[in-house]
Image (cartoon, rainbow, N blue to C red):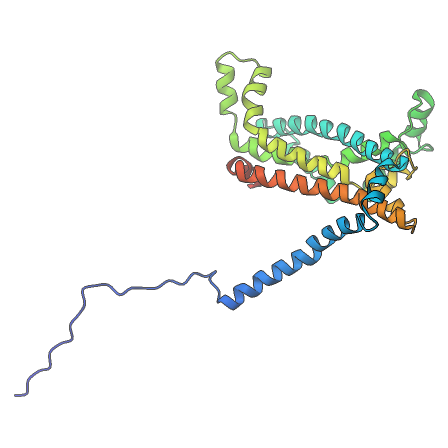
Length: 301
């Protein structure tokens, strides 16, 4: 009888299963994707930004600095600062009030109010400016009444520029605060009230400290948009030089003059706005890095 061959030895160690990550691509593919991303960012973001600063000093630093002694440029800068100084606090007050009401209370029309807050995101700024012209124009009933009885001109005047800017920057602060306040709930406020704090004390010592970094984040975005707004302001201002022209409009007016010094002035003012954008981006990135947990709650919606 032939000998039976021995059975193969069975290893007691389990077979190792290698899992491949679904997002791990070959090195050439990763390099290609990174290269495309860098190329697109460089072509459409970095290169135009660099060209603005280069063109601003194209004729030397002297002509670029001379822009800020031009009466029209100085007037545009001051008007832009004035409009931002009015629009941002108005939206700050409204944003806090709206966020408090929506996050802390349940009432009929709450969803509709949230939709109204988002309206400026979906409406073209040009359409928004045209709406104000149709409402407050000198030949409309409301505009004629304000002008005749109170001497207040809205269209082609500073009040119209401020109103248009407030409209387009309306949602920025409220949309930063609403998700965070909803995520935090009402527990802290109820505890403060139960300990004898008044409503005003609860707001200043409990609610506001809890949302201060999201609030600052929204203020930064609101201020940047207020200073850079073009469409709505262009429609409602009439582009009256030295009166209703903000920095973005003055850049366009300088650029359309087709003179070398005017071109330099246009790029010099554009460099101011670009510098503001860079500063805003740096502060925004620092806030996201330093207070990521608090700001992440505003992205849940």
